Image (cartoon, rainbow, N blue to C red; front, side, top):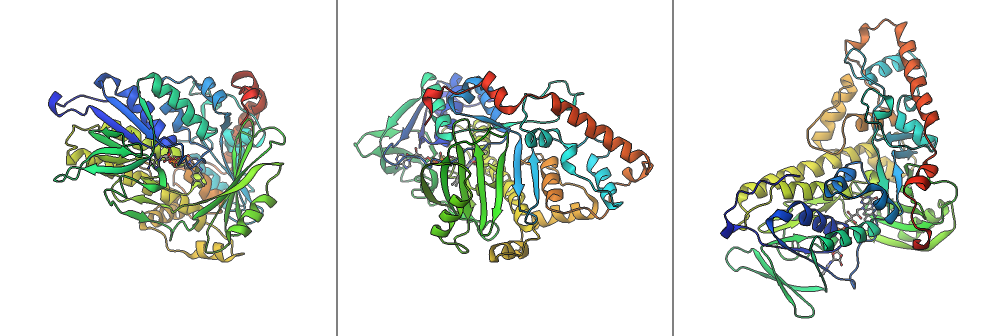
Length: 513
Ligand SMILES: Cc1cc2nc3c(=O)[nH]c(=O)nc-3n(C[C@H](O)[C@H](O)[C@H](O)COP(=O)(O)OP(=O)(O)OC[C@H]3O[C@@H](n4cnc5c(N)ncnc54)[C@H](O)[C@@H]3O)c2cc1C
């Protein structure tokens, strides 16, 4: 996050108003308060305890570590305060077919040979009839399966540098942590419900919000973090929403916590079910569980019963139902309002991208931080980047559904045969034809992520890179077993995930919620 001031004092933004104090609101407050502190901005965050937050969001992507590092947050302190565990990837069960499982890891598969990506050699081995288990060529997958964790090495020549990690945490505690951080940086928190929004009659810019108590808060820039309500972006500025339900038909979730049984694994699990999928996310003090489903294919009661059947420990509390729609705001920056978080868009939580997309939005907003008149070029560039970020996550999520061989329920038959966006069709065609992965600068999921899902769900390319075909047939088994041994030797030496947490970032047991 960088900022180069280029604005005259009279046109400079002085007052930023953030409406909403969920994860999005407090991440914005912390980042703007910290990164733009030189500008002497006054930052006010309005939130309503009576309305509350969405109260879900437990699994993250590795990018969050860089967000926290920029703010100077101590990782161990954050992990202890949020009941966090480490996450090396997501296990997908029953997606390609029932009784199959693969892990999408935060890390590489193998190493390039003769500058050709490793998977071309794997494809060659599969094509020649060898029984290949891709898991064995990924350190984070093997570590996850064996419940091991340590921080990656900074020595890029070591196999221990071939992975990243994220957190599994309580997002409500994360927001609480960031609230204290932000207030220490001078952010003012204002409790109360916004009941009216005033706009300039000519420009339509938002000029103030007024609370139920009558308190009026004026601002130059407004950040809408009001969640699915979209109080400013939708209810005030009427910006439309692109609904992607035809590609991502899950639109509801039922969630419940449970007592941990056994050691917490360093990975999230997503198990495909008859009308959606169920998550299992181990934190230090509890397991988060939720069934994400399509209401066209199962009732709320049936989904709740199915969730409870597959929870593996005593329950903590009652199941809670949520409704959502996958899609994105057509222009999440409109006039002097930027919608960040659920108000800006939401893609169902299969790959834990909610908090990642918030982080992307904040980073881009700070990099394009405007003068008070919010010029069109900054706004357009922000919207261009966010559109691409959402679309690329969308395509990756759809891949999990369309690349199934399941036909055992109406839901899976729909997914298998649904039409998909041209952008995804192009990616899949290229991979099937030549094993090449379309790469872009923007987008959360890079090369190894796509490989994990393609191979994990049974898509193997027809052809391989011509250079990989030149390795003598007899040399390949040796290369493969050398790599396998190096990975399993390294995993043997890693500590158990739970021991690593106990030594470095255990939460205070008296703070169990
Ligand atoms: C089922 C499900 C599972 C998810 N799982 C994950 C996950 O594993 N990982 C991940 O990264 N993301 C996940 N997400 C997404 C994640 O929950 C959200 O991205 C994140 O919590 C941010 O929410 P928010 O701050 O935008 O909205 P909210 O949490 O809804 O906060 C909205 C805020 O606005 C305030 N507000 C609203 N109206 C007013 C008003 N009139 N006046 C004053 N204040 C107001 C509320 O009080 C609240 O403070 C999941 C989402 C769902 C639905």
